[in-house]
Image (tube, rainbow, N blue to C red; front, side, top):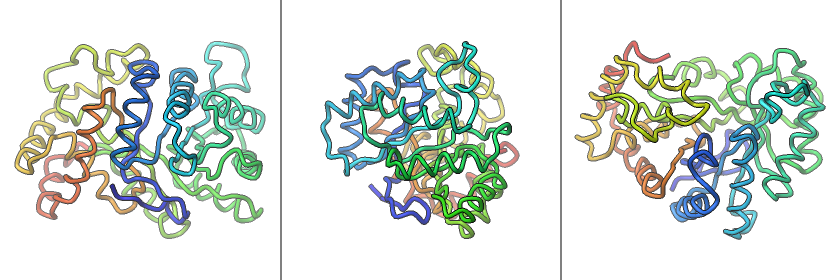
Length: 326
């Protein structure tokens, strides 16, 4: 396993990490989580990603139960969570969802720590931008979480480069804790934000990246080339919105060509896709998902694929995906 600094921060995270979106509670219970997190840890993964909104808080509870049973020293692993969506999706508590105001954030961290059974999380993200709350209010609240010892570092997820820079400059001006990491979607069909929009931020403010969806929600495994298979994430309740993207004809045709490149390399299409994301030196960690230990161990093979991606192969991959990436 490779370990990389989180941008300019001193924290080192595994190049591949394990996330819980969709899987925990929906497809994975506490026993399976223990088994998979143990296998991930044995494979060198030290970073486990979560969010308050995943499965309405149940994902954090399951990960917390698994961590308690595994009994690892706290210094040996990194845990993250994210805030914005809230838990009260259908109620009238307007300050408990779709916001980054101070009231919500200062209570959300306490709820997450209780579900995890932890005294602090290592990373906490603003899960989406909030156009209705001043960025300065959000920056003060996130900095205060760190000052209170409830989190160690903070960052953003799917924020624009302009908003990230604004948050950093507010923190700089007021001597607050600065955002050190962004968590964007990044895969062969979604590249411009990481490769173009954020380009100045890497050197200017030392931004690190923990990227999500390296397989484009499963599209880059090749299993959707003939439609939606039973039991896939596109059939999970509340995630059927993924179906249109997963059955995209032109992108699936490109995946078929990518599978030929992968076969020549002696790796799976999924390993090729994850390895491609991990080969970007700006990426601190690629967040992977798995619903079985076998799938997790296969994903770990992406590090080998990463080392085999020569300039010639990268040029072929760019040609195959040309015009299909946003």
